[in-house]
Amino acid sequence: MAEIVRMPRLSDTMTEGTVAKWHKKVGDAISEGDLLAEIETDKATMEFESFQEGVLLHIGVQEASTAPVDCILAILGEEGEDVSAVIEADAAPVIEEKVEEPKEVKQEKSVKVDPVETPKVSSPVEESSLSVVSKSTPNARVKASPLAKRLAKEKGVDISLIPGSGEGGRVVKRDIDNYQYGVVRTGLTEERYSEEPVSQMRKTIARRLSESKFTAPHFYLSITVDMDNAISSRKAINSKLDHKISFNDIIVKASAMSLREHPTVNSSWRDDVIRRNEHVNVGVAVAVEEGLLVPVVRYTDTKTLSEISKEVKAFAQGAKDKKLQPADWEGSTFTISNLGMFGIDEFTAIINTPDACILAVGGIQQVPVVKEGQIVPGNVMKLTLSCDHRVVDGASGAAFLQSLKAYIENPITMFV
Image 1: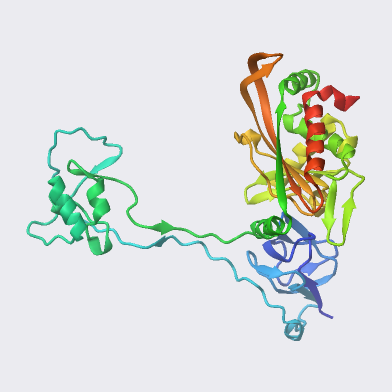
Image 2: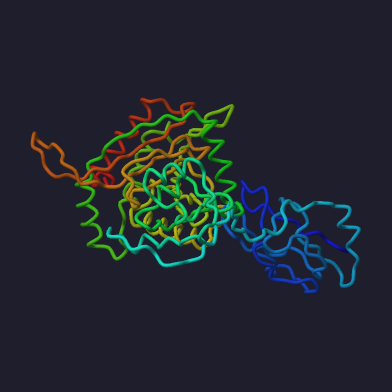
């Protein structure tokens, strides 16, 4: 008897999936555990194995097509079995058809002008940015706007020498402005754009961050941290380790220690209740080609710097290879987003709900600082905490940042 294989829900936020690749074709015999297809979710591309046996009689979602969770992905049964009645009874339509390649769209047409010799001029012109202007056919009527004609007359320019970029080759103001000494600047003179389909990951990012920004009342707290001791401590630690730790690893560990002291920040809004988490699971934002993933370092406060470093590096590689599993990005109690390695001095981040807070980490800057009444060279870093005001008040957030600052400025205290 024919059995329906449905589009699986492979993550808690997944509402639809895209078939990236089929590993079986209609007519193939399928055994339990066989790899059927690769399915792109909102966060990763995952392998989907069959839980049923039989002959693959029907494929309900073609490669590169998107369909909702629980629709017909495939139908298995006995060879030669008619499945039309099963399909009609289920009637689960595919949301999107196969995505077509984006097409470049042009809004205006440029005008081809017959080339002739260019008038010689005394003014030097950079050949790399300018090109010779073509001359129109003698006695031809020049199409130009009244403003363009007036500007050409004021500048003493023969308007017939200027190719028009307006509709139907009409000379307009920008053509006169771009004209210099018998040449015209090269560049795009027609409007163009391309479009690409929105990926499942980008759709989820858009939905979840919009919900967070417009639902959770954000407020922001910033603090400056002296990084001199952290720099020297990291150098000393890495001189003894084969596996090098990063400044981000130090921040993750320091955050976990601070969260243990300030459970209000390690909380989440649950509509009818506020959940105070006793465990500490720090999510670390990882940029990938299509967006952002937040794999979770579990029980972070119990792990060493070396363990945190290895785990974060493994997550980062898994995210880029689309090999992370739902369990890898679920269950955070706090999130860290670090753009310091991209040269960003400071920024604010949108809370990764249901977490109550997210920490935005800027880059280390060398600046003059005052120490013991003297102006000396120093290294500082800006941290900005985004808080959900339904859960965290200003004083609670400030106390957390003070503890975090103390740990980062004196890393040895994390090992006491």
